[in-house]
Length: 201
Image 1 (cartoon, rainbow, N blue to C red):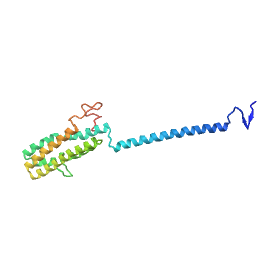
Image 2: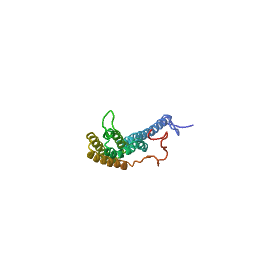
Image 3: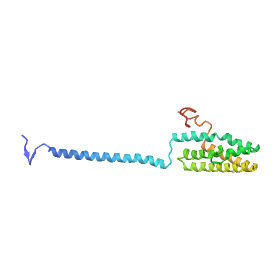
Image 4: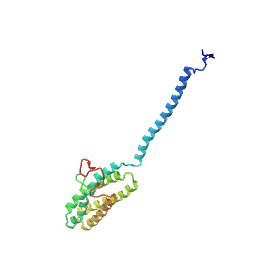
């Protein structure tokens, strides 16, 4: 028979004390795990926010920007190259229509300014230095368009010719800096040109 010693049975741990000890251990582990979980969750939330603050852009988003706005910018090449011919032939109305800044019916080359802006802020979202360079070329383009519009209204051939040369230089600088090509995705795996997976859709 077990010997009673101070109200306890010798060799047997009291049931209430054992439960209390187990409870304390469980609570300690539980709090530690909860703290780790909270820290991990906070890090998961903060990391994307920091990335967005730095202007981080996913490759998919950048490719889509190139597909939509890069394609539109490239499509203006023939029109830009046609300007000298319009000036030489005295086609002032046609030239004026291309560079018109009228809000209701903006010209094709004037309207391209929006695509240039969206390309700059979208494709170069993660690089402010590149945005500045692109912005400088964009300003040159905008100035040339404004000069052409003014020259077309006055039918000033000399001024129009200078503006046309400046426009072509600015446009070519944009194409070169942005590394645009007629078929943006000929070397891109996993995407089909002019298909359901076309980036322009």
